[in-house]
Amino acid sequence: MQFWNKIETHLDFDGQRKAEKVFQIIIAVFAAIGLISGYAVEMFSVTVYTLAAGFTLASLLTLPPWPMYRRKPLNWQKPAEETANSSKNKKKK
Image (cartoon, rainbow, N blue to C red; front, side, top):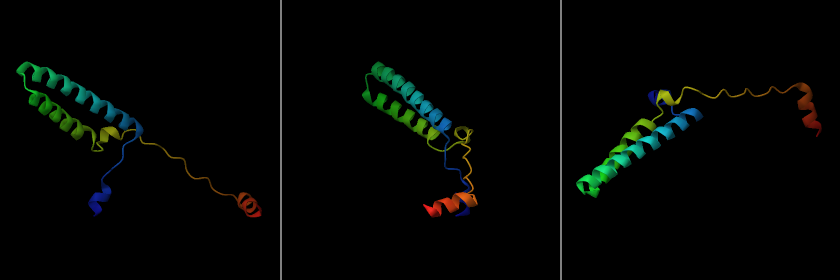
């Protein structure tokens, strides 16, 4: 179980934007190629198989959290320390 805990499973916001853009571009390119090639050979199955291949490629490139999608992590703010005065004021209210 130690191996699975070491695997990074998150993307940053910039990485999510890049992954979505890459996914959409690959799907659009393969859809156009599939439409043209399917029309040329007059077989709708060629269009479907080409689009399925593009979907598979796009999924392999964008679904796993590759390091190229984790280059700009968010720096979260540290929690504020409570002072003695603020905790006394809360107790009075």
